[in-house]
Length: 228
Image (cartoon, rainbow, N blue to C red; front, side, top):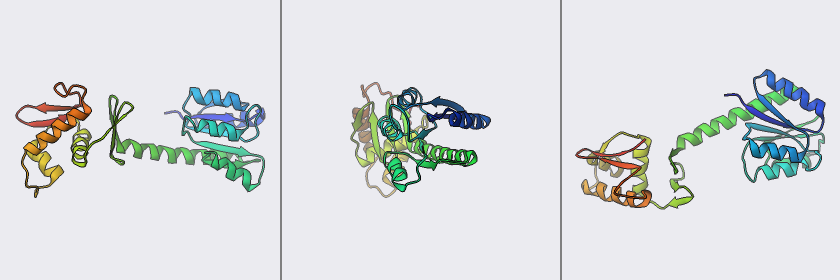
């Protein structure tokens, strides 16, 4: 998929050079020449990276960076003509991911951009592996939290374990005995009715109509499954 970069600098020759170089690597590049224009672009599109100059008309780069962070975590690399450490530190404190000092070598800029994109892609892949979504339900397996829309659903540890197991293997039917052994362990003294009780409680918490479930279904005479 083509990467999207927003380049923000009031020096048009610099913008032109960066744009040309990035487009040679098959990136889509939008350009802005002041802080307000940069924010307008950032609100319309989720960029893979924003290359943001510190000294800008209308709104400086630090302010733009801070305001972008209020609605997005898209990677931001600050460009600064000043070499003082305070500018660099301040840029990172406002939410920037990296900084480059002018004058710069375009090859260095491209290398830093690609490195951040690779790191961000890996982070997104890991997050996707740990998050299961179906409709407006979001199951975060790492934090063990479940949300439906804007509402957080409070589950017990075993309720979450049952939901996670079923959701990670959509459309696979689990018998009561298999669920009991997998979630509770083969030494658990209870019986299959324990599973039925937890399924019933889960449905009461996550289904709008427990008698007409959307998420957890019954395969009569066999067991339960999470519908893909």
